[in-house]
Length: 312
View 1 (tube, one colour):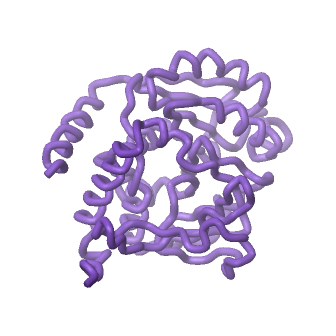
View 2 (cartoon, rainbow, N blue to C red):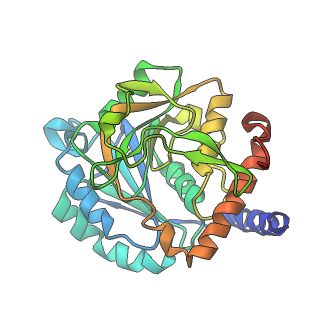
């Protein structure tokens, strides 16, 4: 009932974006040539995690200018923050110089001065990214140790049949959060949703080691070649808020004949859904999740299958 109305409104909203010029700014010395990797981080509702992220990045040679980076003194990784919330734009932009002086890594930010949604924010960041390899990263994801960017990029370079690769994600208490996702039939919703195997358990329980194939990956951290991303059509902006866009992108990458893989030797910590909880009360968030699930199931019904149906 809701999808035809809301879908038409969303398409009309998307159609207005073409006539608007986003604001953007460089903070610190940027790569003068093409960097190896562009990391795109959407911001919604809060930006306090940026300082903690940058403090972790400064310990990583991939983000360091000078001897560990390029000969011209710029860093080999381009970092892009996308402000997807006009209410935080002034606060964030006023803190950027402080963040860069305190934390070290240079970065860029871009804002459309409106809330477009998770997928559209990622697309906005990708539109100004200079690298041939893109990493989409949530603002509440933090590396455990240096070298994670190089590991993901090297995997794409060494394995041309891999279209998307992501790391293993842990909860702050060390429990396993994500090592790939699998489709899961939800009897209550009568729809296909996603399940994270071994979620919450000790990572040692997961038998997977090294690089393993997986049916789906989370958008909290995933790496892709620019060419494959463009051929797949990028992120689908029809979804609302932030659910199932990553699964949709995964299946479009699979349609290109490419694999999805988790690099289990690389671990990052994900606080999970820190911004999504700011959208509104839980009832509204549940309805948005169901709406996105319906859209996802309609789009991918042939690949996902009809499901077992109502149980007696």
